[in-house]
Length: 82
Image 1 (spheres, rainbow, N blue to C red):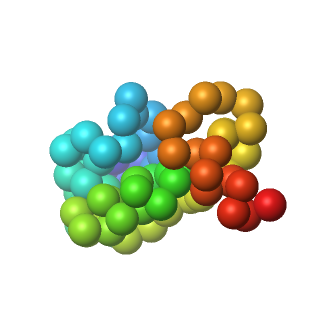
Image 2: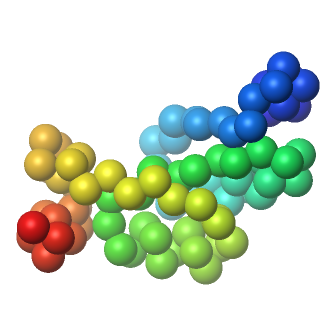
């Protein structure tokens, strides 16, 4: 992240197996500490609630993932949106 910041990047995107892992808030916090944005992709309300409680400040909400993949909790969220 520091190298990306030094190269002029204003944010970073990482791929994690589960956004609810302990590493997600840690990486998000580190990015903020070095002055970068680090949006976390979420697909349902439980992910937003858990990550908000852990201090993650920025989210990218992907409502389309539930249409293509079987993601627990996504179908109910999408049904309410549509």
